[in-house]
Image 1 (cartoon, helix red, strand yellow):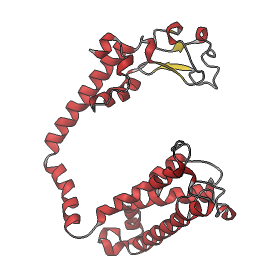
Image 2 (tube, one colour):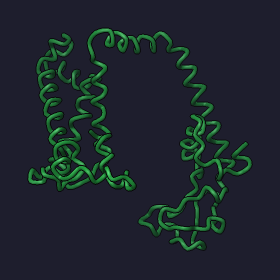
Image 3 (cartoon, rainbow, N blue to C red):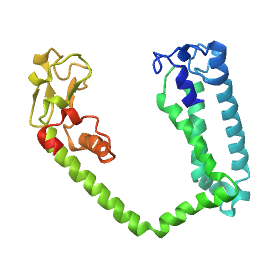
Image 4 (cartoon, rainbow, N blue to C red):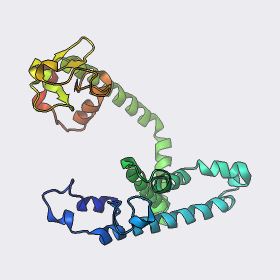
Length: 255
């Protein structure tokens, strides 16, 4: 419902009539995109009947499994065993996918926590508990990882090293590139007149932007390659074959 619900949000589908096809009642039943839908009288923020039902089923299931945890494994017996159960993988999956609903609805009903919708997608991980041949196949994943830990560890080390080195190279090549300057607080900026100090901080006052520090302590403009840490994100995208800034790279950056 989280994915399908985005089809009925005008900000994501402004050029499609489908964004306006789901009214207050439809939204209250299926998606919970708006806090003023037909469930507004409950006073628990934006939610839907489907969401309430799913959370209810997950909550009851979790409470029953917590109560009978010692039947799952003897190590979960007693108080200390129940504490161990709380930190088991599928227990954390259930908590991550249900607690955001209660936080949104009862603790912070008037706030918009966008990340909470994402956390609810952890419910998909419950599919790892499917019985039968799929359960056997999925259960072998950790065995394969353990058996090949040497190869995987070497590959991880090499990958992280290449990533770090290339991020450093990109930082050296692009930290003075004015085409990589982005300004959130002002539009239509001629970045060619912006200046950058030795630490990579950008000043676009001469281009008509507010002075640095006048935006509530945040940077007005910045170079996306102003540090190795920031460079690592764009470097990783390029390592995966995506080149969103290819037209803005300097000669050395393209090399």
